[in-house]
Image (cartoon, rainbow, N blue to C red; front, top):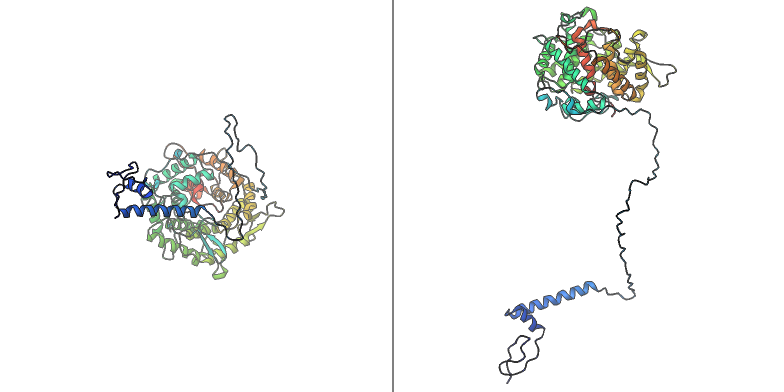
Amino acid sequence: MSQHVHPIFEEEYADESGVEVAPAGLLDGLSQQFGAAPWWVVSGSFHALLLLLITLIGMAVFRAQPGEAIYTVEIKKNEPPKYEEKKLTHVFEQPVPVEVNLPPVEQQVVYHESIEPSEFVETEDDAQEHAARGDEKAISDVDFKGISISASIGVGGPSGGMHGTRGLGMRRRMLHEGGGTPGTESAVLKALDWLARHQEADGHWDTMKYEARYKTDTAVTGFALLAFLGYGHTERVGKYKDTVKRATRWLISKQQASGLVFDSTDAGGHRGVGYPHAIAGMALAEAAGMGAPDDVKKAAQKAVDYSIDAHQQGDGSDKLGWRYQLKQTADLSVTGWYVMQLKSAVMGKLSVDPAAFEGALKFLDSVEKKVEGSEYGASVYHYQPGNPHEHTAHRLTAIGTLCRQFMGFKMEELQGSVDWFVEKGGVPEWGATGDRVDLYYWYYGTLCAHQQNGAVWKRWNDAMIKALCDNQRKGGDENGSWDPLGAYSGEWGRAGQTALGALCLEVYYRYHRHHR
């Protein structure tokens, strides 16, 4: 008869009956740990532990296969170097030799005085917050049958639309990069203030009222409108919304059914309709590109169509340039304004027949002459084929070179011409009594030298700032204006002179540079 023995704890060696019992085994120990847990729990825990041990042993032990040898390598850890408090490590003390094979720098690096954005005088309303940029999705390069016509001055353009450089943020940046100063910005704002105060109620500027010898209200209203647009003002944005709107509407009111923009009471016999239409058409095209209403865009397109279809010399593939009257033998002075009008139209996403630019290029080729023995391969430009107009050669060369820049020619191809006209015509200088003033030359030269950049721009810019900022009128009703002195100033008076002066000082942000 078998005796039933109940398990007891390890420290107990006998039961109540006095029968001796062996010390508790592994299962008994587990039972002690789990208390009165059921037998299957104890068994499961035991097997789980056993499985874990087998797994660990299998992972730790590598069994060699027949024919294999096992090698063991003792890896010693290198101790980190002891830190010595007094020993300093100069990581940049030892130069690292680097082989560099770069082409020599051909253009002088220009440094400009640092300008803090907080120093600038800004407009009083939402022009500070919203840039008048036009269509933000506008393409930046427009290829016309192999001719590099682009929506910036040359190849490429700024982000933020066609006129994104005229918004507050980009304007500050471009002003700083281009060499502008708080003084140039102050001069621009004072000039715009003078123009706004002297605008007629219907939106135009009366040239005869302000010292002009001829009535040229169409062209001068175009100049003034361009100055406001150049600073980012439109009829929707900026302190001068009403000024811009009235000027734009006045120009549209003077547009004829053919598309010609011209006030019939102007002195048309003096310079014809060529100059005023191109300048007014350029202003309308810029307004269209800066988000103007549809009626402005339609008027701007009509002006472009008139310029190409009615006024440009020649037809089809025989087109050339422009002059005072319809289809008249072209001259470079008038042609320059038409190239700028059509360029602004491209920037404003208006429709422009490529034949117009092709004709302009043919005309430029016909009046271009290489300078013999020129160190830089300079070209000069004549007034008309066979008519060098030598006393204005510097101005004509600035116009011709700017046209090339507008149509995307490489800067290095034009460097010699820029250097030539700056040496020939000099940099801006007022003179003791204003006898050195030439705003027509300064306008083209400023745009052209700014595009070229480098040492020639540094020289030109320093002189331009001094000439214009030091001689702007201060005090009284003429405060902010420039006296109508110098070549052609009698044709546009104080209003035209002030608009052109402002346009020169807006050069830093009015157009994006061809190459950055």
